[in-house]
Image 1 (cartoon, rainbow, N blue to C red):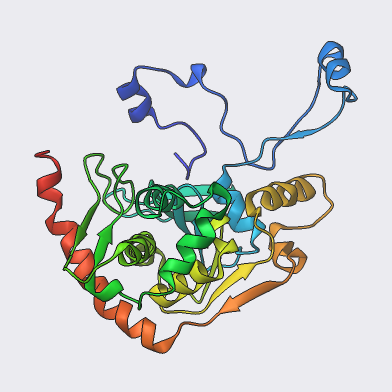
Image 2 (image 1 turned 120 degrees about the horizontal axis):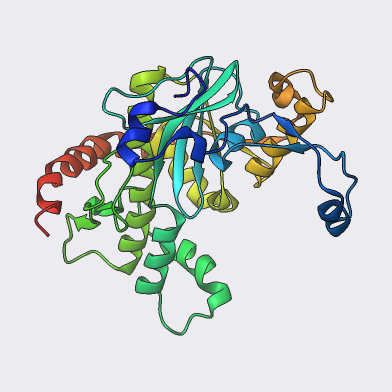
Length: 314
């Protein structure tokens, strides 16, 4: 129970366990100390070395990007992906389609996570690239192929649910699909459609997060995908708003360091995170591409919902 800082009794009863079998819920900045001499010697540390509990990677990524103010949304694409917004209190959708993590007593990170991110693009690369391309050249070759296809992939739409899906569907039976295929579509079209589908899915999650948290005033993005300028631009065009990309790719590690600094009293508040961040690069949406994706998104979303009833029949 995030509001009362305790394990939920109803869920514990359902699982057949008690709170005594679980660790005590504490603030992510909680300090622990008191290493035994044996363990301290093994680790090469003093026995009074403080340990900071920390938080999960997504929650800390928001902090590590400096996305600590209410109204700032963040998008992360690594192997999987997530959309999150920081607020002064927890927000979850009535249907339970979003999560809420506590960063500290004044900051909560609300959002939704997806199963299908960079892992799906890796799958697509293996399926659609020529077999004679060296492994180290696969990614660059894929981006080169994508550049030859117009935004919208000439009507080819991809739903990336190859691993089932968490937000926004919460359906383990969901499956991926291509629609709108015609004789003119090539491997290049399929590759671009996969990238677009991953980003459209995150826009779908963003819509769910907005329904409980309100419209974002600023959007930031991070993760391994942000090393690719082409992928950054596709995401920006699909979201339809300027997106800031921090220079650091390891936002979760940066967030963990900031929690530690606050816990040790070296910074006054996590609100200082914004001041401690390095430079970022802002991408602006291309207006023509933005229009294509704005028209495409309702179709993507409608088909996603219509197909729900068929997934359970597989």
